[in-house]
Every structure is written in C-alpha cells, then in structure tokens.
Picture 1 (cartoon, rainbow, N blue to C red):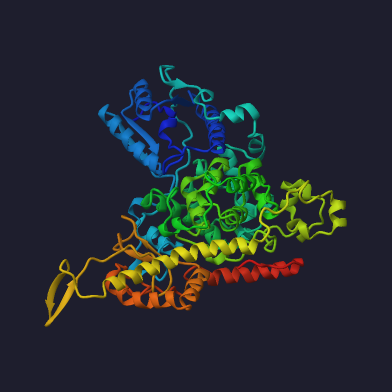
Picture 2: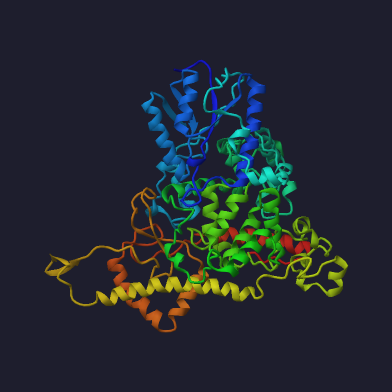
Length: 637
C-alpha cells in the first residue's frame, strides 16, 4: 500500500555481492570499511532528522530479508537504487521475481547514473571519432540516454518505522562489514583520519570544490601535491556510495547561477571542460561493463591476452616478488612509490598517481593488468568495478583507449614531474627521502651525490630500496615487442587466409549469376583483429552497443607507436608483403562496419582531433609554460 510508515532497510548478503573468481568481485576491504562508517552516519542522521527507527539492518539473502522486513509494516512496494555490476544485475532480477511471488513489487530507481545505459547505442555511421573514444559515447548518451533528472531535496519530515526485532534483523556491527584484519590491526585508522565518511562530508567536499577548486581545475587537476588545496575534487568515494548524487553535480554545473559574480555568472561546466567530461567518463565506464560484462577479467582487445611478454605472478616467483614490491611502494622509483604508499595509508590516489603506478606495473614490470586491478579494488575507498576495470584495461593497452595522449608522459624515472614539481608528495609519503633538497633529486635520488645522500640520511639499497628495474628503456621495449608480436600475428592470419582462398571456388561456396558473371557468396569474417590498411586494432561490437554495427568489426584508436612499429616490421619484406596480399581479401571477407571516419572495409582514418590530441597539445603548452616559470622541465606528451 502507499502512504503510512516508511521502513529504511539495508541488507548485507555476502554471497550475492560477487566473488573473486567471477566477473563481479565482492567489495574490497577498504570499500567495506567506508560502507560500514557511511551506514553508521546515515543511521544517526535519519534518527536525528526524522526520529523513528533509523536504518534497519539485516544479513542474509536479499529476497527473504526484504520480504520479512516488508511484512513487519504490511508493505507491498519496495524501492531501491538500481545497481549495475553484473552480479548485482542478475541478483536483483532474482530478488524481483522472488518478491513478486510474495505479492511485493520491487521498483528500482536510476539515481546512481545520469543516463539510462540500457538505451544508449553509439551511431558509428555518424561519428568522426573511433568507437571507444569518449565523444561518440557522449553524443549517444545525450541522444538516447534520456534527460538526467534533477534530484529532489530530502523531505523535511518522514514517518520512519521501527523494526520489529524479529528474525533476520541485525545490528550494523553484526553485519560483518569490517574486515577481520582491520578488527585485529586497525589498519583503517589512516582512512578514518583522512575522510569524513558521511553525507555531510560529501556535501562539504562538493561545496569546497565549487568554492576553491573548479575554477582552477582545468590547469591544476594534474597536480597531486595540491589536493589539500582542492586541485582535485576528491568526490569519487561519495559518488561511489551514493552520498553525493551525480545528478546534483550535473544539474548545478549546468546552472548559469553556479558561477555567481565571481565567475561572471558562467555555467560551472564551462569553467572546466575536463571536470565536466569526468562525469561522462564515469557513465562511459558503466556503459562498458553493461555491454561487456566481463570487463574486469577479459580484455576488449582479445588478441592482447596472448602477449608473451606478460608475466604471471601466480606461476613466476620473480614476478610475484616484483608485484609485492609494487604493492608496498618499494620499487625504488619515488613517483610510483609515493602513490602506492598513499593508497595503503589513505585508501585513495590522485588520478596521475594511479596512471603512473598502473603504467609502471604493466609497461615496465610486464605484469598483467588484472593483478593491478585487483589490488586497487581491495585498497581504494572509491573502488568501483566498472571504473577501475576500464582504467586498468586502458593502462594495459587492452582497453578501448590506449592512453595515446599520455604516451611518453608516464615514465617512472622522474623525468615527468609536473604533477609534483618539488617532490612535496614524495616527501610526505616517503619520509626517508624528505631530507633531500626539493626538486628533481626527490624524484631521482640515484642522481644525488654521496655527500647529499649522507646529509639527507639516505642510503640507496638500505634506507630506500634500489630501483627494481635497472634499464627502464629495455623493460618498456619488451612491452612494445609483445604488442607488436600479437598484432603482426593478426596480419599473418589475414595473409594466410588470403593465400588459402586465392584458388578457384570450392564446392562448398554458394554461387550466383550477376550480369553474366559468377559471384561467390561467402560469409563475412570477424576473426582478424588488426586493420590491414591502417594498422589500427579491431573489436567486435558487442550486442546492444551500437545503432547498426553490433557483431561487426569496428576500428579502435590505436597508439601511433604501435602502428609505426607494425609498419616498420612490414617494411622488412615478409610482413609488408603479407599485409599487401591481405588487403583485397580483407575488403571481400572482413565484416567491417562503416563509420563516419572511413568507408566500410577500407579502414578508418582518425579525424584531426580523434583522440583529443589538439586539446592535449593545448594543455601541454600551458603546462610547459608553468613548468618553465617554476624552473623545471615539462615532459608530458
């Protein structure tokens, strides 16, 4: 029935939250700590504001727990926020059916996202950008995803019911959200000191960012040493746990009153295009895990899974030791170690630190991206399966975006230090290096003189570890060679198929008469994953992802260095002739969808700003000017 009392319920069902063996992972330990404290805060806020019983907690299967709670207040309708991880989607449908059998309707509400991801279809025939880049998704979301609603304020009063105290009801503490390791060692003390895990903390973080951070975000968001001064929003955990609505952020950024007199009445979204697009990147990640549910465990570019340069810690002791040192921030590269130690201490990392750490693990230690994804999932307070998986796939060059804009700008050797010019972050999280002079020696302590090291109390290999990778160029070359090998293999596959089919039609081929000539009808193929015209990678568009190209090959934005390496390998003779021989075959046999950037079958050349290169170059020039003014170099791509 409608009206009457409202019972606020949280059910913890560990068996329905996912598991480490499947495509949906159970919440990590840092996330569980945040969830526990945010629920405690919500319960206090509800009781203080509305009276009544606050939040009712229950542990057990969702359907049984919800049905039992509904029975206590004679409710026939249950409202919940829509969830989007694969295990949650399946589990919530089971719960919906089970409740329906009891005469209870489950209504799920879409407040966690801006757009209806189930309706978003990318229209590649109209797009000048590659599939998998941001702008085609933005266009599709705005065209098909519905208009984001503006959230209503909380009601001033509400009749909050008390629980009955019956079977299945629990206390927050008895849910078991706090990991046993934290109960034993209190490792979350740093998290609690760093964060206000409440809705009021979310409101204050958003207000602080609007006041102090947004206007300077476009220029300063790459600075990980300025987070206390709001160079970044630190909103991610609040968005992750629903304590700040993305629709509120979206609506306020679109309001011309946002800027007030300080910013000439400008809309917030115009103060920082980068921050505005971050909202869409969040949606993009959720869309990816919707159309590609195994995002956390399988590469979009499936041929990259066969790279022979990957090292697997579960069967390689040396790789396991390298992974352990990376996890603990003991690699000997301060730009990597500072971020990894910040992660363990605070449950959070700046975006630049995440990219540096991820790039180091996959490009320089050659450890498969999935191992880094699992570590971040366990230690980040904002751990989000969709966003984390998307980021790690991109870092591993296996995702839809290979971070071409940042190529060369994520070196671990301290040559790129615009994100922390004086080494302030290094000094804060690697105190054994704090005695070194501010500047490049904190980034590259191995270049300090013996006298400087003694004065700072630093002994490389003792007080601070020696570098885990002696030759970073050679390490990265292994990555490049591994990528080249799997891509060349796809070209060879096309050439072999072309040679095999070069003879007369077989008896199995179906033939038709057209204008006096005989044509052979053959099935189009989607098993060659490199474009033999441009060298770009292909992906098979998954069901529900596009307007008219599902199940067909679409070219992806591919790093220019990978394309050059393939072209150079071909110029040696064999591979070049292989690609040439395969082109006519590819035109006839590969099922490549037409896009706005290229005709069907003949590859896809990017538009002038396909990966945002022009925008990145503009930002790079600004950063270079600031770096020069500060007296240091800028090596970001």
